[in-house]
Length: 307
Image 1 (cartoon, rainbow, N blue to C red):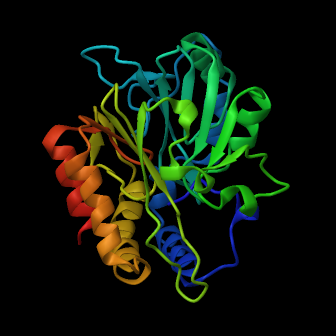
Image 2 (image 1 turned 90 degrees about the vertical axis):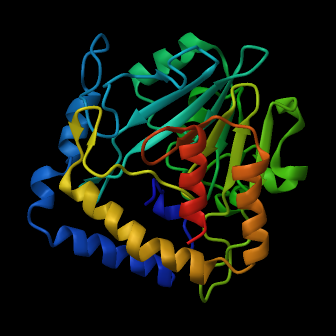
């Protein structure tokens, strides 16, 4: 489950080979290609006239360019949900947007910066901070930095060195105490999940940082937790390929990650506890899946990371 740029990923390890086998298993199901969103459909969607909304998909059932996170009130937290096609399967992708106290914007896990997305973001305010929260969500980072050269581009710990010469990160969050830069003026709580190691190679896998925007009570998670729906989202069917992907991720990948790759289990559990018990957020915004709220959202995270 990744929105990756292969050139910045380390040599293939056993987990990567496992993901490859998973994708092959899905592709061997003939009906997947019937129901999955193809790259051509996504290409056509991007050519939609600016006045129109996007095609309605399970990953963006409203078809909107940008959504207010809390529909009851505009708190300053937003999300841009889009299809993300990986091996002909829409695994979904969601970018987070936060309006800071000074009116500037903080961007989490940037998506494709097409014309409609750029207009919607620019209408909210000036982009000042752009964050790649883990090793995987880096595909569009350079495009955003090119579009907003005055913005600061942050990478999760180790990402600046890992992508040297490819993506122009300004700040490595590993060099920042607590992974929360002072220029964010205390608006965020940050948790670096640094207790994982890839088999054989031994380095970090996701090396993800999770963010809680305190004023809007919004939690942003990238690949640590996903909330893929079972069948339908707001009246839109979830394609067979996406459902197969969810099953493989739930039943095959997640146990490998939690039981083989998480090395310091006490440290990992402490990080999970901070997310689910210590931080006072009300809305959980995942990059992959559906936005969740309240006690249900906290239980989803506990169940997902405590198997």
